[in-house]
Length: 610
Ligand code: M6R
Image (tube, rainbow, N blue to C red; front, side, top):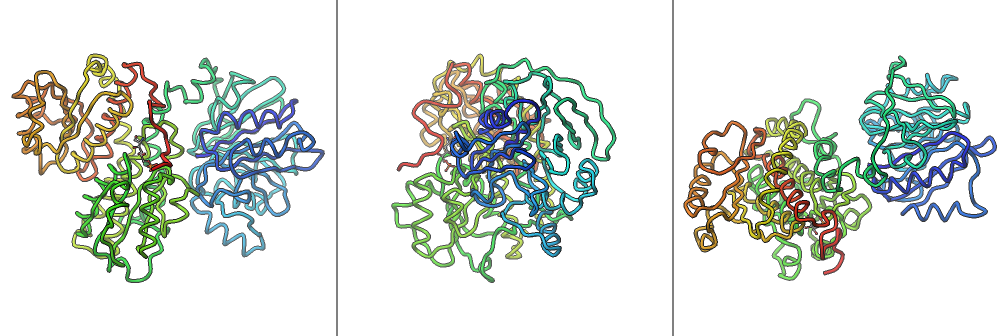
């Protein structure tokens, strides 16, 4: 996820671009850059780090003059955060200048092809190939060249393109990644998101998937990627600028919950072979024979990432039969864990900066143990210091309460479990194609699970004055209950506890009294009857039971007070779906209680202290 902005008109482009980028920093802030047509040439300035660094570079006498330009704020995917990897990118002649949001999946192949033709690449990004390809395929007409290039690049992209050959023109292309066009008087804009242009106009075109726009200062025309004109309706923005930044959602958390289908899809992209039979993890470069030698895995993480690890433990053990321990990092680092050269340490961390997790990583490395990091942030400490990295492609997570990071961590762990089973030719390897086909359905099923929002909101309105709640489940449902309970505590400030459903009767059942809310997660077929018995135990004490269960489960309806039905999914993968209503429940409880949802008291997004 990155932010792009473009301007053509009569104002100084630098001011418009910097203002637009400041509204898009939530989409990434690893680097920022602008390129502006200046006296017949294009002047380019970019800088690693936050937008403020770029603003300093182009301040005072270094200001770039000109009224046409493009800008970018980067969330690093291919290539670490650096000046060289910052956008905009150009071909070797500087004929074409582009900004990009998305992933060009076939960039390696294109890069090899162009290198063989004499192109020299200056960055590690996937994006740079597009600038070179435009130059290589130049037909003498920008519009035709862009159409031809769009046919050669695969993946997701929103592109802003300008060329020295045709000054006074900007082209925007959209495939999957979002892109809008702002319509002004004698000026026009492109942007990844509406807030970037809201200061200047409220009239926009929202480009459709597979659509492009050709902008001059006075005109905007739109086309499909075959070059046929398309007709667009002007959309008039009525939201406030701050609401627009959240894509119209009231809070970042709600926006991020709703981004999960996209985030899951992105995390799966390129990691399942075309025939759907195998996991492809090019990013893991283990020495020959290492996969077979692993005899123990330690998963180490904190908070929500630890809860993802609890699901990962079960997935890896089930598919590979390697024993897995999953432990909170603050405990692990001080207990002299027993490891050997055949132990693999997996650290899971959204931010890649959590102090306790990083200490565990460093401790493991000191002992000569191989470390695999699962993280969301390219260029983070975890990504730089681990031996191997699996990136979750959730995009920047702003809300302190982690949501899309969790589900994409689960996806990464399922893929890793299947990949490791495959590498070791483990007993359960035959199940992999079926699991992979289930994984591919998850974006759509997550979308369906989001449809539970109105009923959960209604439930939360009558329920949120409670002070205590229990979450119960067995197996993977227990792991999800832990996450549901943490989410509720974190943002609603209600006291909540997660219990393995079978463990309640060993003490905690004493707390179950009339009307106390018990949220039961019931998706594990082989444990269904056992969980049902535990639900009956709490019902017998007059608890109020809300079950999260599969649609069509008639049996559960007879035993509980209310059911939140989620779409049916392979129970092995159900945590990705069953957690969604629990995230929504915490969200709406927090709203009803009038809390600061995105910035809960006493907490920080990235915990870099012990
Ligand atoms: O960045 P990390 O994944 O390492 O962060 C770990 C925890 O601090 C984090 O998951 C925390 O528990 C969340 N705020 C929970 O929503």
